[in-house]
Structure formats: C-alpha cells, structure tokens
Amino acid sequence: MKNCLVFIVLLFCLNNLGFSQNKFVIQNKKQSDKIKFKLINNLVVIPVEINGVTLSFILDTGVSKPIIFNFLNVSDTLKIKDTETIFLRGLGEGESVEALKSSNNIFRIGDALKLNQDLYAVFNNKLNFASKLGIPVHGIIGFDLFRDFIVEINYSTGYLKLTNPERFKYKVCKKCERFNLEFYNGKPYINAEVKIEDKIIPVKLLIDSGGSDALWLFENKSLGITSSNAYFVDFLGHGLNGSVYGKRSKVNSFFLKSFTLKNANVAFPDSTSISLAKQIKNRNGSLSGNILKRFDVIFDYQKALVTFKKNRHFKEKFSHNKSGIELEHDGVRLVKEVDKNTLKGNTVFEEDDAQNNNNRIVINTQYKISLKPAYAIVELREDSPAQKAGLLIGDIVISVNNKQVHEYSLQQIMQMFYDDAGKRIRLKVDRNGKLLTFQFFLQKLF
Image 1 (tube, helix red, strand yellow):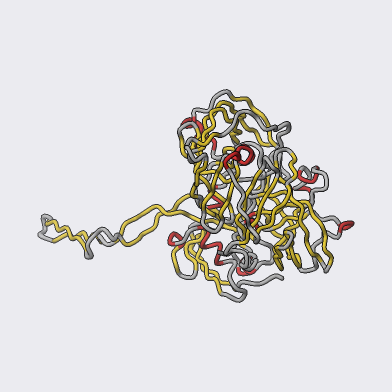
Image 2 (spheres, one colour):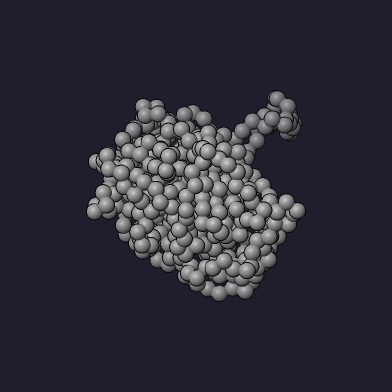
C-alpha cells in the first residue's frame, strides 16, 4: 500500500509524568487483550470508549496525555467534568492552542479499563484530523497506555495486543532486533543510523507512531545531516500550532542495527516550525509510521525496550506525491446515482385538464439523489504538475480518471498521486459552480 502524505505531527509537552498508581487494568483472566485497528495513512486508529461514548483515536507514541479534537461536536455527550483552561504548544508557527484539562474520566480500550484518566480537549476546530484522513478521528492517545502494558503492534495483521507486564514472556526471536529506549517527557527515543552522501551518521530519533511519514531529520551541517541537491519544498504536515513545511528528499540508507532500508524517504522540516522539538538535547529527528509499519513492534516501557521484526511491508518501495496535490474532506455534495433497490423503468402520472389535454409527469425511478463526501484541494505544491495544469486551492474534485470521487475513499485517491511517474491523471473539478477538466502527468522529483 503506497503512502499518503497526511501527517499528524504533534509535540505535546507535559512534564513530571511518572509511573502513576492510576493505571489501566485488563479485566479478564488472561490479563491480555487484542484490539483490531485500522491502518490509515500509516497511522494506527483504535476504538476508545470515554465516559461510555465510543470514539476513534490515533495511537501516538509522541504524546503524553490523551487529546480530543472535534471537541465541540462531542463535548455534551462525553459529560466532561473537573476542567481547567490551559494553553498548549506544539509544532507549527502559530499561537498556543486553548484547551480544557479534564480529570476523572473513564477510559476503556478493549478489556482495558482506567477510572481516573486525564484528557485535554482542544477547542480549535481547525485541528480536525478527520477531514485529512477521510474517516472519523476524535483524538490521540499514547503514554498512558504504553506505560501500563506491553504493547504489541502487528502492522501486518492489523491487531494491537495489550498485556499485563507481569504476564508477558519474551519469545526467542533470531530475526528480531531489540533496542534500549530513552524517555523525555514520557516520549520514547531510539538510537539508529542514517547514511547521507556515503557518510554513516548516528542519530537519536523520537519514535512517533502519530506521524505518517518515514523519517524527519533536523538539519545540522556540523553532523553532516543535510539534504542532498535532489529535494523539493513541500507541505509536511499539521502540527498543534499550524502547518509545517520543509524539504523532501532521500537518505541512502537507514539502519536499525541489522535492518537496512535503502533510499528511505526523509523530510527536513523548517527550523521555525520545530523550535520546541529541538529543545530535547541531542535529538536529531523522528522515526514515524512509514517505517514503523514495515515491522511488527513490541513496546515495553517498563523495561525501556522496543523490539522490531520485519513483516510483509518491509520491502515496499518508498514513494512520494508526484502530483503536488493534497486533498481533504470538505463537507458533502449532492450526487445522482443508480438506485439498486428499485426496478428499472419510469413511473408515469397522467392528468386530464379542462381542454382534454393530457399532462404527463415522468419520474425516473432508476436514480436517487444522495449526499456524498466532497474532497477539496487544500495544498498545491509550487511548480508541481497539478499547479502547472491550472488547478487551484479550493477546487472541489468531482471525478478522477472519469470515475466519480465518491466511489473512492480519500486514501485511494491520494494513492493515485503516488503512482509511477508518467501516469496521466485527469481531474474534473467544481470551481465556484463551474465544472472544469484538467489533466497532467505524474512527475518523479528524485
């Protein structure tokens, strides 16, 4: 499955996060539970029940406490209580974001239950990641879950397994690599190596399962961490405090001990967008979903260990968006489609008027009018094939290669933009009520 450029990159700083006595507890005899998850744009999306309401959360090793977005839509149902207003800082160049800190919330994930969970509810409706992923997503959760369990993420089967550390036994695995973890503010860091311009460079990386990219590296000329001449400037993702832009390129190789990933994607974010992230001493970047998904991973926070085992995604080629377009869900539109529940044919009503002339009303019962998702262009890379073809930010995409967009998911459409260079893409768009057709060819940039 090719990768889509939708990023959820959050740096949420909360200090003094010890291993609290308030814990998740698995309510079964095995002290272990498996939860089915969805892998959307390299992100793990799991069901989380909060105060009796089931929501969808991204499992994010890069956050310290659960954060709820879409807050205004779910606040009444969740019955959030014991609140205080705070302001959060994260990635991006914008201002701090207002949020409510809430205590004494009941969280349930599968058979795992916690009766006194803090969460942070964000007011800013621009932080609606559902529109960027094309599915309902209400928030993110990380440290509190990883702290209390051995967490196994099986990217190849789509299952998350939670186990009480006292019941977990490591299996002999000759094809695995195990690493020590370092923690800062409740977030895990790993030591790895990258090869740039024939130089092997040790790097300390945040393990960020809430980012859908492969690698982010912070440019540092003294260490040799710089982009090659083959790069392009692009939108990298949405941070808590705004959008993040930077360079996209490749590294010759990325090493996790004996595991080698060649020609791995890398992004070099603008320094102004990551000033807070760079405050962590000796941090060189992030290791995210496009690499994590190539392994089945075991996180053991209590022993400060992480274990990697290659899976069926390991040999997938790294690709990039060759169109220059980023799409988001943008409300709904009325669509005329065949109604499979009705018989073929038309219904005819006749009425005689005073002049003995028949008035005929013909209703075509083969079709129905439905509300379907609308997808809008929200980012357009400068000098990209799509921009040169004449497309604009704000265009609503109606069809892709002569097929209506509502027949695709947002991820399926974005995957088309990662296809082979030279492939023709034909888009029909609605621009302020006027239907226009454009075509362009995907272009490889490095």
